[in-house]
Amino acid sequence: MGAKRNKLAAVARKTAIKFVDLGAQKIGKHLLGMLPEQIMRRYQMVPVALDESSLHLAMVDPENAEAIELVKKTVGKKVIPLLTTQADLARALDTSESGGAAIRALAEEAEDIIEAVPEAKEPKESAEAAAMEHAPAAKLISQLIKRAVRESASDIHLEPGEEMSQIRFRIDGVLRPIASVPHTIHKGLVSRIKILASLRIDEHRLPQDGRFRSIVDHGEIDFRISLIPTVDGEKVVLRILDKSAGILTLDQLGLRGQQFAILEEEIHKPHGMILVTGPTSSGKTTTLYAAIDRLRSVTTNITTLEDPVEYRLAGINQSQVQPEIGFTFATGLRAILRQDPNIILVGEIRDAETADIAVNAALTGHIVLTTLHTNDAAGAIPRLLDMGIEPFLLTSSVNAIVAQRLVRKLCPKCTTSRPLAGDHVAEVRAAVKSLHHNQRGLAGLERLRAKLARPVFSVGKGCAACGETGYKGRAGIYEVLPVNETLKPLISSHASSSALAAVALKQGMLTMREDGILKTLDGVTTIEEVWRVTKI
Image 1 (cartoon, helix red, strand yellow):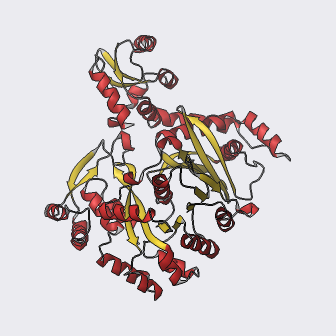
Image 2 (cartoon, rainbow, N blue to C red; image 1 turned 90 degrees about the vertical axis):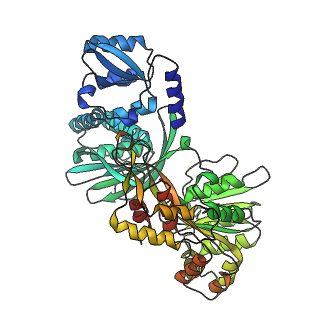
Image 3 (tube, one colour; image 1 turned 180 degrees about the horizontal axis):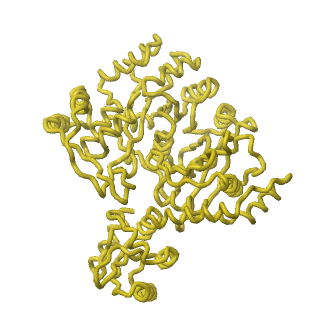
């Protein structure tokens, strides 16, 4: 998107029409009230400034004479057209008071019409009735989906309450309240989502999962749906899977010199296991996909077993587990081994059976990429031992372990500098002091230490582009632990995770917190973010 914005700005410089960056400014309520919202959306325009004689109008097509003439007659002033991007304009409208008003208006309309979802013996009859009688609910869900996609949300939460239902978006890993709607329309909204995902709308007692696909702003978006019953009704979470965002490459993940070198070397070995650990939504699947992207070729048979398949990868054989019919990670992995694979991706090791099969696959000439839920890299070894894997099998099969978290990146539109708070200075200095000289890729370590003499760090002030948070987007922080000859005797003796970590640190392993601090010093994120995601 940044490239497109820069291109348009360059075009604008060559013409008499100026380019306006809507993400860098707030649009006042008085400006939005000058034109009807439906007109602004139809003609892709929004007022951005007003003086005594002129109205400055941001437009996707500033040469649209019809739109300019309409605005001129409506406001009675000269119109000065400005160029902007479609995405920025849509975001400006949806995050404005106008956008919020639209949601509130639809909610009120739905409340007037929706009293109860008709129950039917046959799901088909019920779905058809709901589709016909709950158009306001459909409009509201559509509006929420569009806004969530335009604001780069990863999830939409619809949470029932006794009187009001709360709608929240997860943006950059943090939930943000979007709107509250009367509880009376909650059932209609849930039914609309069930219809989209082809779920049973007459089932309210059991959890349900589903998927659907929708076109938003000319792009195809996949949605994964999860419903669970609560005392106040069914809670819904929609996971947004935007294929247009693309898969990150290994080079784009943000791994530093030694971290990158180790992972690059280990995934290209002829056999062995690569483990990626971290909590839910820490970017583990993204790292696995990046490794797969690095390894795929016409001479390699790569097969995945996922729950669910989040992104489709060209040239990769992807399967989704279905436990309800007996197609589990364990049974699926057994089947894959009969498919002559070179590389196997297992979405998650959840039980001892899957762990045993995965380890044996790594020992018999396959590269196995998988995930595990542990707090740090060293913690993966005791976890596998607890699952019943023999130490000698681990030392022979596990190549490397990657632990990771996601931190929010500073918003490029409103980044400024400030002195580091006093309670953080000592901690940061201690962490930087502990970094080891033998780490490749950290040649600037002395420069970083010198910088701490006057600790001034970047921070986001908050603007329209980032929803006043100061953050926009996310980046990974990592620690990479190679299972080398020094660690193998410790694993064989059932050493604790702390003992394994201590030896790894002596060998120069960069911890997640240290990696985060270095990214803070580079102006990628803030120290508060690093502390937030690395606290145990």
